Length: 144
Image (cartoon, rainbow, N blue to C red; front, side, top):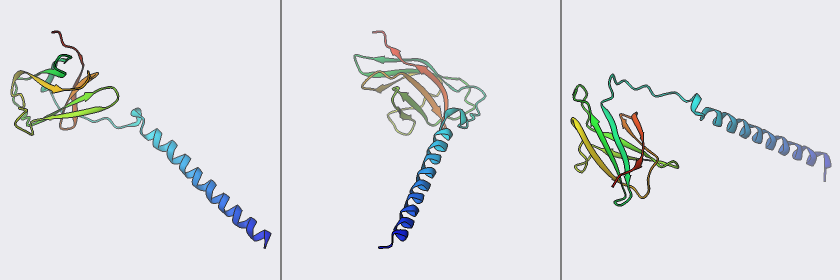
């Protein structure tokens, strides 16, 4: 067997492995840097006045419901056919859409309380309109 030929093959395999590892390490570093919040572009929301506001957000331990009381401005300059509640448990964020079905009507003006069944108390709740977060509020325990 030719020792010189086998050493060239081993050298080629080692060099290819080092090259693949180097590319992988550089890719991981760049990918983690890009995903950092400070380097992410901010979403720009074009609302002169916030049309929806969270008045109260509390968790009712007896009914296991998240109770969200929202208000809407009386200016009907913007038609809102649907919006989304973003419910943040600290570990994950779930969404609950309002306006796509008959069980949830979009508030036209004034105030309304929405009840969303939750297994445990979330940390905070937000309202998003057209993929733009309008307002966020911490969730407290409801007074019974």
